[in-house]
Image 1: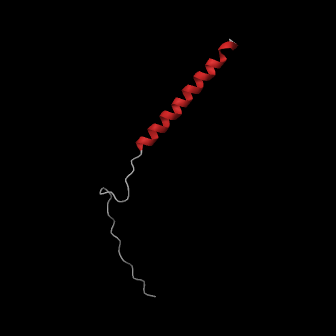
Image 2 (image 1 turned 30 degrees about the vertical axis):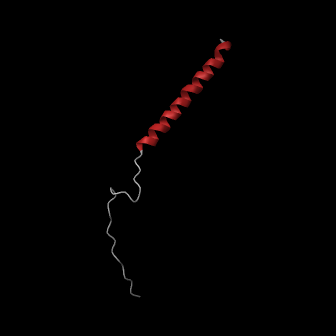
Image 3 (image 1 turned 90 degrees about the vertical axis):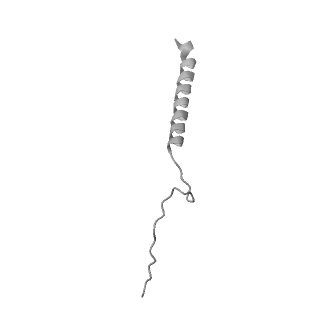
Length: 53
């Protein structure tokens, strides 16, 4: 029925929009950010290199 086509397009638009938003929310909260000054970072020992030319 051609009269029902706008409702179908609206339903598809809402479904894909909600899927996109849900995908972005899941990706945002699955990433753990640790700032450089936090206490959980492991300290790497750097050795001083004295170049003698």
